[in-house]
Length: 440
Image (cartoon, one colour):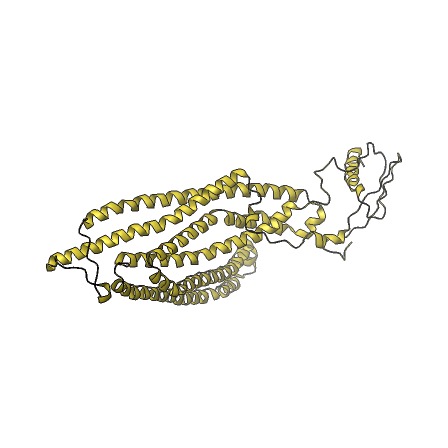
């Protein structure tokens, strides 16, 4: 054995001299000897795959630095602002609707010569007279410009929020990927025997993609939806709490319909993909060995096998179409029930409480409640992405934090003999595969 190789081997053995579980006798011609430690290989099966603790939501940002925190703070403020723009748009929409209704009332009064008409009591089915101090056209022109302003601000804020979270996520994923790869390279060989190559490759690709989605643009979407939902709910309650409570009482039907449609669509899409993947596997197998298939005249047999693998695809497609159609009917029915409740009770409130309710208020309350239920149904998929990100990040962070039992990067640790000349003899050293204890 060459001296440089002996020196490297001595360094590795010297690092183990601090632990005293088992002894390794090193006999050299110059009399240098020492006691080292040999790890119990059977413990790797349990220690290499410990029970991974589920990450909390904020723990997934463990590798964010101060710049990332600043970027995410800016993105959070922008996402909340983008969601808050929608209730303000409803306020503008209410003013435009009331102005149009006011214009219609003035036209009716002028056509039928009712200029001397006075207000009739709301309790008797009366209505409030239109405002004659301001022209309806001027009123519309005064408020319609805010559509452009609020629309531009909504786009600007959402772009800032989306960009900030995407940039921060890429910075963190790049840092995690580097630390994960470096720590994997420094693990001992026994750990690789238990962990498996496929699992490591999946961590560096699929799991990191899931973490990226969970800390990236999905967070901006989630915060924007939360701000929009809360803003619409508060806006509707302020404008007319009675009508809002009636609409929200039947709104869960819309949420159930939306989520049912999404879940069933995903379910049958997965079934179609699995069915096509079986057929694609057969086609790939045949094309890879096309010479063998042709040599044994197996074209017809392979055609039959390929056709049989595709028999389930039309059935899945038909079943998917029928079920999604029923879900769409249920969604339309739920929205129709909400429409009916809003219009029936809304017109009653306009007749009995005409000073508190108007056509514009009725319309914007309905839109606000419908947006509240829609945002609530869209939040569920975002929460699923967060759950996937924390589940994938748990094992990744565990690997990043794992200390190797034999770390080759720490060359200066342990006791290193100054000289080493001669033969090396190992005594009482036993070896078993960590994943195969019955083989030695």
